[in-house]
Length: 391
Image (cartoon, rainbow, N blue to C red; front, side, top):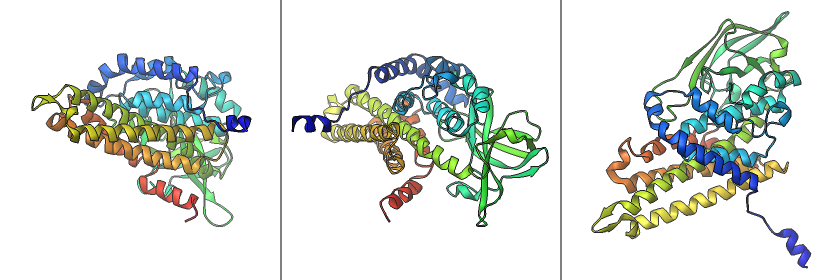
């Protein structure tokens, strides 16, 4: 009986390595990122320097095997790193998360040995970035509605079309875009999707950085244009016709990174609100001594803890090789909406000051809004979950 109970015990502690990652990333975020975040956001400026510093921490290669310049650690370690960055600034958390989940990860999952050896070492060091070209002006939630086409020729493939809202698509260190295209028709008549790697500088490939965003203003978001862009057969990622499968697998894991951004955003907003409520005096006592405010903070703390452990459990399932698609959608949905509620209440606790850019909750309030849209809207997550439970 004792052995059986012991086998059923659940260990919620983080490993020493995971704790070290949290401490290392938090220290860097507090000392290097925090002082620069506001100015970079105001200028809408992508920072090559800070991106390379993140690379020097070793976090870009956190899930990549050592043979390609990575650390070969688990997915939870990666999620913790995102959480700590988002706790301070969503823009740089987005640069990092997209660089790994949408850049490095597809190469790891589907790339040839030649592609991995060519691109991964620099990506793992933060010396370059990859982007994932999926969304189009008329293809968002309906990812299979892509109109960007790839036509086969004797010399390889010719790509025509456009993409929009692509994170890391036009930074000074972007070295490749993974582009989903319509490459023909499947046997049942449905569109056949194939992904290709397109490098900046390829004739006919142009980019445009998007400005005046509500959120993540110091991250790079781009429009991509393909006009008779010619790529060789070796630029194909995986096999012809497997683009949709590649996209779905990439997004299953990518949702966990967006959940981590929601968790970090919520934690940062909560800490800012708690600190303000402890210091701000009204009617002769700190705000946090008023039950109306104290209860808001109690609810925020409770939801954040629930979000953290559910997200960590979803990562545990992934790391164990167990099904995690439903849990990934749940974590992304819940963490993003906890971020929304927490940031909203944090602004409310700050009152008028919460609307001023000199206070970080103003940025947290804006940054959280994308989390219910990016990598699948909250509505799409509910659709995924409802199908998973048999509806």
